[in-house]
Length: 256
Image 1 (tube, rainbow, N blue to C red):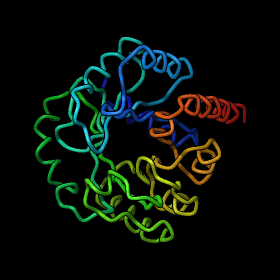
Image 2 (cartoon, helix red, strand yellow):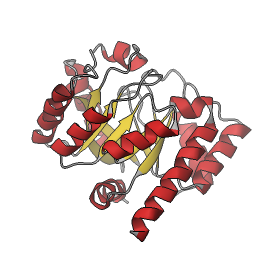
Image 3 (spheres, rainbow, N blue to C red):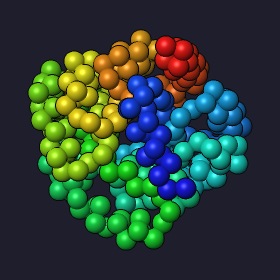
């Protein structure tokens, strides 16, 4: 049902609760027995969202992954995190309609959006207009190279704030701050905090979150949703540890 993901995201921001998204890159994910067990485990722990996508998608596994997950749990919102118009499937529940507002590549600001718009109009996907902000994570990542954009320096929170404000004035309803897959360092708390205070919208944060302490810091700074991708690929127990922490955190918020 359209509007479900929007309601969940905006409720998080309004109620102060926190959520976790598992980012699955179809090029790096083998749909074997271990993957089935991973999906069952994160479903049991109540994963909030699953993002599907990446900077490079050379395989045809996206729809296969969607079908596998839906066979296990139909309630987990499956959201496309597309790197290009080729990464589209109307089997998903929603799509992060990303505008790379921190860059100056017109193709990723509006160009590819025009190409995919007719497909989205015919689909049942929830379209989530999202300002995508790349931040330097201490390492050149695939998204930097593919997007041909320079990330915002991580010691310049004022640039991130101005960028987020511009996106807000343009009418974008969600914001995703990303240090990129495999980033050495996460986005600084000060930058997250200042961006969150400048916008009236749900804030998603990802990249460089390798330890639970990184996740705690991102939440404390103002993130509504954290995205675990590379860390889960290497060690799924890290994702389950994060989910257990968030479950306890949200329970404490209910009690208070």
